[in-house]
Amino acid sequence: MTNPTALVQRLWNYCNILRDDGLSYGDYVEQLTFLLFLKMADEQSKPPFNKLSAVPKGFGWDALLKLDGDDLEAHYRKTLEELGKQPGMLGVIFRKAQNKIQDPAKLRRLIVDLIDKERPSVSSPSPTKS
Image (cartoon, rainbow, N blue to C red; front, side):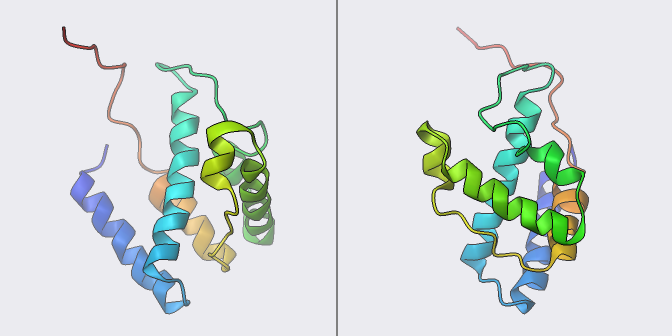
């Protein structure tokens, strides 16, 4: 995994770019939280964790990575809407979620260049200490 301090700095620098497009600090943190949730759910569904994802098929991280331009922006909007309709905690987290990043190129950069390039630093689950 990249140095956490460097990652945080890159993400905040990108916040400044989005702020110039009219996105508030709160909007940026909200969108980043949604995207990081999807990325983490994807990572938890793969080895070594192999957990069943709460995110419905077609609305996960892999679906966002495959798209670009207006298709990406439209699918991200649809993803937020669909996740908000899900039962349980997933629906609570995404209820009334809206895409605030209107520029598809900037959304793609956030997803592909900033978030997806990060890899987990663990190779196996941590053992619990007794």
